[in-house]
Length: 301
Image (cartoon, rainbow, N blue to C red):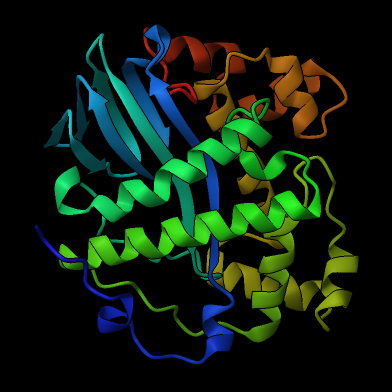
């Protein structure tokens, strides 16, 4: 059995204030069979993912690389435009999460394609099961982005506790595979504060650049100069990119109609959403969904 390396053994030593700026949260967790429509297809994956294959097998392809995992193995598949195919009998425990610095850099840039036998890291399963059980009990109506669900303070705190345990365990297990967590690059403290505000703003709420700039002690032009230098887009463009990614994920993974997804993003009508999506993606929401068939991934995988 391979012991997990302590996170402190591989992570750089930085002020706690910098670690506090790390944006890490659970996106979705599911434990069960892969539905027929989610077994095979092309996926635009923006999140970090861990799959424990309970039954069956999965194959993932990205570029010229291929990864396979069978029952009794964890797979951390690579994010990006990938092809994935589950066997008809596949069952899995799937944990999707984000761990990013305000610079946009992932904390775990080298975790892609890691395959780990479950008996080599039993603590990973012990941390994932209660997390999945809690989400299923408290947020059974949520689908693709848990952060958009409503919750009481007690449920929020419990979720944070369970996810923190999972996250710490996952980083330690990956460290044993040679992963070195990435340290954030230098970033203006005012920009860091603005990014945190935008990352936590509800997707349906429009942003006010003047209010945002004033909140962090900048003018709008100064704020957008910092955003353009760091991310290549303005503060509004940064928030729109977040909304666009949510739309892509929801259209790929959720069976909900486009009108409901449009409402999640604050659009007053489906035609308005469709026009916005076409400008972003070059195709309509329907065309995007159809291009993923057969087998677009849904939250059950």
